[in-house]
Length: 115
Image (cartoon, rainbow, N blue to C red; front, side, top):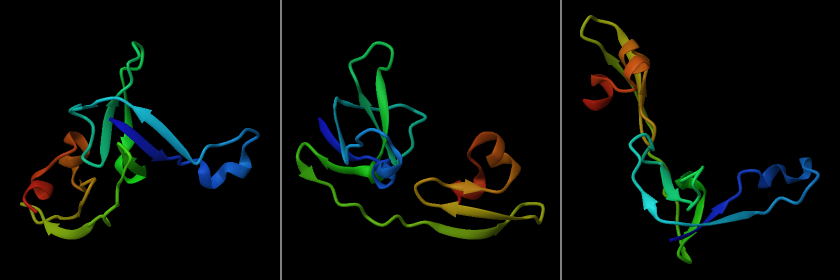
């Protein structure tokens, strides 16, 4: 798989003393890594010390010379009532979150999974 990625430093290229490329090109196979989120892509590198890289899907321009169109992310914020009457702010989308202590500790909670 060949992936072309927009360089996140491109907008600030004037601040560097060296040339900054607008796009980076990577080649490898997509792999599943349990801690890589849905909005990220893990791609093998073939290097022993750095076996894969994680790429933000929103920065991908094309895959195997086929243009990738980015869909607007559907981020939704809700206020939910906890089992003991507390109110928590739940954010649903590519990176879900909750203000409860359970989410802070486990990175998941029933407020996120039930919505």
